[in-house]
Amino acid sequence: MPLFLVVVVRSVISFFSLLILIRIIGKQQIAQLTFFDYAVGITIGSIASTMSVQINENTFTTMVGMATWALLAIILEFFSLKSKKCAQIIEGKEEIIIENGKILEEHLKRSRITIEEVLSELRSQGIFNIQDVEVAIYEPTGKLSVQKKAYKNPVTIKDLNLVPEYEGLPKNLIMDGKIQQDQLKKLNLTKAWLLHQLNKNGIDDEKQVFLAQLDSSMNLYVDLAGEGPSFVIDTKNEGGKA
Image (cartoon, rainbow, N blue to C red; front, side, top):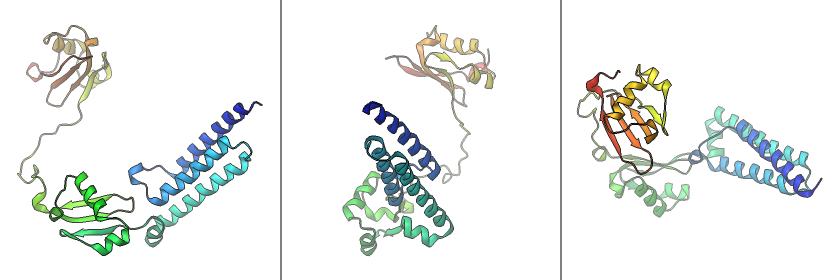
């Protein structure tokens, strides 16, 4: 078999082997990976790439190596779920680094992060004054969780004793010039009603519309294709039916 075909076959095998093992281990968002998860993922990926291009390596033994790493990760994850102490050893534990506007320097040292990194992370969350921080916790994932002091939190509807109207998700009635008949049916609307709303605003063909969404207040948002404008049609005065 030609060398390039050998590489192709081995690459396919390593690709699907890696996919299966990662699925077995479990998926997490990249932002939530601990250092342990990251190290395991990098190692298994490196073994897979070795199997792909290092044709002098035995395919079966390389797959055994990948499987062993995956199995160890699964076993340690199991013990982490059963024991909090084990989880802290493997994945680390959270560390309070700011409390009531005061930086806890010893905790910074234990977490091995600098004050510059902390300030940068605070700025990325819109906090420029440490005095505004009630608590900041350095998570095992490397993320900084911040609770602002009460006076810095924005006023909410609950604070004003207001009851908001239910909005729900808008329904896509037209997508890329195609009318979504299933959505119209769910809303007990017709294609004729939709075209009537468009015709009132000078649109004689649904293909001119890139996106049309109807919200719970019967406001029809229309975004025309290409460089066309977007606008909102108030349809509730017509009862919403053709």
